[in-house]
Length: 287
Image (tube, rainbow, N blue to C red; front, side, top):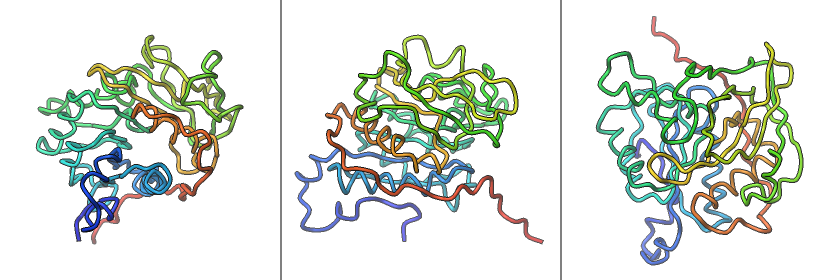
């Protein structure tokens, strides 16, 4: 069996015509985040896009598990992607794998990212690929790594109240999201520098029970990145966040916006994208 999972299987069945496949936007998910179970929630998202929204999806995950920081097989699939969706945290991919992501970025195709993708890479000091540690700044309009420009959070005990940024109510990505909602994600601190001034802020988060004085921070925005691509980024992404219907609507809308396709109206409704939060699970050391 292949070490990574390709979706959909229908794409390889003999009665599927090349024309039919070509008409479907191809969304490639790249996952490896240690903590939040992106390799569990993103396949659920991919399946929904295929089942109800006429897309096909490829899901790539770190191997042999989420703690494998140096291996995400199958990244050559990005060459055929119409949209890349990233859920990464502190990877150290080899040059031959990273080259596929670099080629995708330079193609100026759209990009979407979740939460820890603001610190997607963590190469050691003086490593030839160390500059990738600041990947999010150019690619997603997010801080260039954890701790950079004050990028931190307000404690795992906290959660977040989310509201629409005043003036953004008519943004197409917010179609169907009419009021405040609550998520489990503890708020990420990104202001004052991020997102960039030319980004469009969509949602603002307020920390609930923070472990230090907190101020509201953007939790979702769009931006034309340094490569010329349209991008959507959210600092949310705790698996329990997806139990909130507005969060599900947000990510479905964002995929359509990234692909420059009409926002579903009406949409197909809530779907299952919930998984238990596992936290950091390190492999047991052999005795």
